Amino acid sequence: MPSPIRRIAHLDMDAFYASVELLRYPELRGQPVVIGGGSRHKPEPGEDGQLRYFKLRDYVGRGVVTTSTYEARALGVFSAMGMMKAAKLAPDAILLPTDFDSYRHYSRLFKAAVAKIAPLIEDRGIDEIYIDLSQHADDIRIVAQRIKDAVRQATGLSCSIGIAPNKLLAKISSELEKPNGLTVITEADVQARIWPLAARKVNGIGPKAAEKLAALGLHTIGELAAADPAVLQENFGRTYSEWLMRTSNGLDDRPVVTSSETKSISRESTFERDLHAKLDRQTLTPMFTDLCVRLAGDLQRKGYVARTVGIKLRFSDFRIVTRDLTLPNATDDAIAIRQAAGECLRRVTLDRRLRLLGVRASALSRKDEAMSESVVFQGELFSDE
Image 1 (cartoon, rainbow, N blue to C red):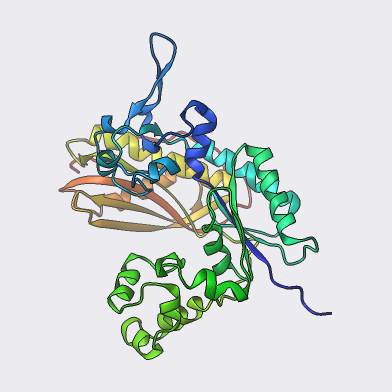
Image 2: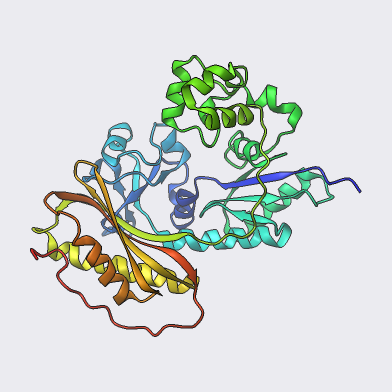
């Protein structure tokens, strides 16, 4: 029997974090809303009982935008943008704090709803998945609409789905009709619908590569597909240039991977103001401990133990320093993780202010038996010793 036609879907939740917040604050629908404030930006009831929302103009610090509603995006505010820059573009936008526990809850709900209809799912993060629909005999648009309806019913949220012969085209097509889109692309549609798009729309062509392509006069995917392979190889090397040629022609043979082993788990915190490792140690020490405790909790919930513990520091000049320590025995114990992270920290010269502090567990393996819980010791890691 011939193999079924390959039909891969990419499902992307629409402005996911912002949409979850709008479930909580439906009166903000239709307004520019930015997610990324700290807990101090949580709406507070006024004397009249009505919630008082913070405006983006009220923000002071060095945080970045986590996400924004489509109304805020129309004003130029996008994820990963500095909050102070965003405040200049949209000073009257509503500012809300992030609530990752809620986002993870809704992530589990939408994925469970999809799995009941189409179980061949590759998890790509909190708000997106790939789905292999090749074995479904029904009209593909009917199947996709059924999935969209199930997500809406389970979460109250909308999603956009792109369906194509492969993952590359599916991801691109899921962006074409956002929000609440449903787009089907075939190989015959590549020239008309994919080639006119900007080259940076291809997942894997980052800002630097897009800038380099533009310098060569290659702005669209179609222009890239028609480029001289020798010119691409001269500027990007053989491996990457071959990949550019394949992707620009819509070719991608990656399978939908329905299970994978986690390689590392990390926890990190970006400070709203730069902190000095010694002068601010009373703030940093409990924060460092909390990151280690949370990391241990993540390992325990996911059933992993780690052989390697590491730290990540970003200084005020944006220089990043990492250190790792391999343990004699794998662990998910908060005490052991904190002690190892502390040893890593002592191998760094802490003479400048910090913007970010992170702890990472890697060299993971599945946990064979439960480990006893214990209380974390809080030492002065950011001391002069």
